[in-house]
Length: 381
Ligand code: UDP
Image: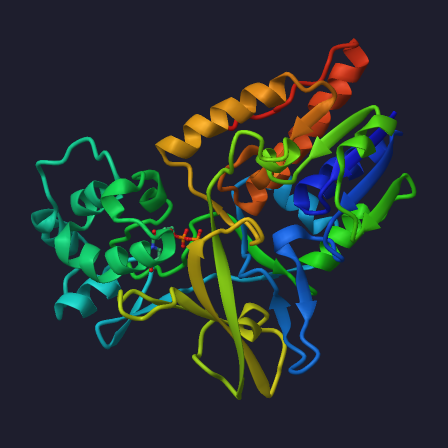
């Protein structure tokens, strides 16, 4: 079959590779002039530092098959994300752990003492948290919430935390040990040369044709048997029902001599600091040596039509609109919507790869059984 994958990010590459290996001819098309989508990495000409062009991406997973898969296309180096945060004139470790608690409250608590101390601060009247704020007050209490989560979250999402879902905070653990690894997954690392060479290796197959710098238009689909679309779901329908809301990011790039901040990610929790964090990219590749440094100050705001979409907002209004686009998609034969933008979900890289592998498998199975491939392998709702 002739397959068109719109988008040369992880979804497009992984699906393309699996279908090419099964004997299909795959064209992977991207409107950008590079592969990798928002995982794209490039070496900065000025400093020589490997840059995560669209913000930091750290690979972490419990999925052994996905870990084996990525290691088949790149050499991974061990990497653990240790995030710091500057709040109220002091630097603390994230995620909130025993060190953060002892430092913040000026104490020397042991794990069980800290657990009891935090439990005494937590709001016990909340048993079924309905939003981000309630989730925070229930788990860490008002002081840690105000310091570490409230200001950062207002900057990141542009909304009061009581309007945001509790699920956003659930991404972050609370630990009563000194473990300050941001993630708790079994496998964590970074591709030695960055994500773009890894994705180039995935795309490197004789049955895959890559077309960069070309935007998809509806007539493109006509010459293909099936389309896997990893662009924004609403864009496929020319936004005919309106636009799904996203947060976008502005990066203010600056260079420094030597070491600027001593870590890869420094968050800024205070509301009156306009940026959410500063990332220092050479610390994402600690096996490299560079005399100079490249940093990004990161600002979050509502995405306008011309902006790059980053975080799907997924509040009640967006979900209602999403449901209507899902219905449209389900009436569109021979197109499957995949990935973060195609399904309008926050997706980690490992989940994106897992879903892409499963989607390709589902397609091959449907083809074998003579069944139609659905519009979504995973429901966006
Ligand atoms: N968050 C926060 N303070 C921090 C870091 C994160 O309040 O210092 C909140 C914020 O609302 C954010 C969420 O926790 O959106 C999830 O954080 P994560 O680090 O997973 O954000 P991402 O890497 O997706 O930007």
